[in-house]
Image (tube, rainbow, N blue to C red):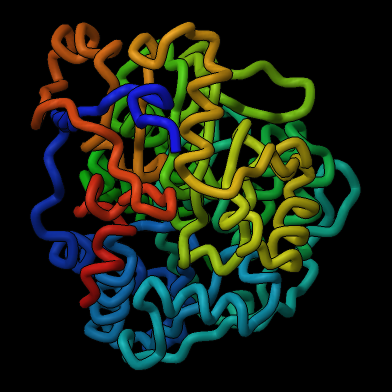
Length: 436
């Protein structure tokens, strides 16, 4: 086996400080926003309220959902939970229920009924002449409350991207609604989505949305209440605020970027294009920064249940990752989105060590010590990263960056596996190993 120094550079841990504080009392804030809302004016006393929750990896979603449910009960309403996640979970009721359970959302933990059926009703016609679908359970309720994160979308730039309006249109559109919006690709997301949103604001009983903004450390920073009258104007401002505080890689140019694992719990695209700089949408340009010469991903999160969407962003991956693919949810997710570039399987190699070696060899640098290499656990948790010596000057010049330890060899096992849990003990993967 060749010496490690001839394969890749050494690495050192770097802390990326977050200047945006964490919301101290999530449950209390949610309860206050619900109790102070005008729900009593919009929903009859004792009415059934559908509380929509999705499949994104929002760290505080179980806490937010339970607080909202409890507050609605205190107001005399009869809340129940409804899956608002489009075609995720293989577009089946069982798959969506299983996904929610991994986020701590079950009938037992929430104390209310959870409905995940995929049946929809047609509430009108979109501007392109297609039916507007909407979740039957939510439609039959007396009111609808939606809980979702507002953040830049992984596929496009527009006035409305990921947020409460998108959950109303695509999440509660179930597979039928998601397919209708995605049929026209970027035009569907930029133009049809807000147009259908306006239709649904008029024809459904949407009454309240709680928009969650997260800081660069993947923690809740702010929660804002949205009403049918304010959502179209307020959510775009929240989107710009979210864009300004989201986690990013602090370098403009990277020779080798190693992502520990992709996953639907980290990004709807598996890996967030806003972080890796690659959009991979047909006919569209990539982002200006960062410019990554060689991108590799080593694994898929357990929470993704074999949906390896986003693997096509990478140049290199492991045989282990591809072997975990469940073709059904992967195919459904990709075909529903209509973004096929991201589904291409990259060059696969037997071990993590092989991936590092090939990534460095093909990075257009003559010597391993010259390679500007960055290792991250995923594209959501970026407060701690590992960098090579070629990036030391960039770290020292960064006002929000600080080394946390000396340079060392990349920790591979005898079998060639990267010790991701050792490098990132506070990450989702690291906490997974530690258990409850």
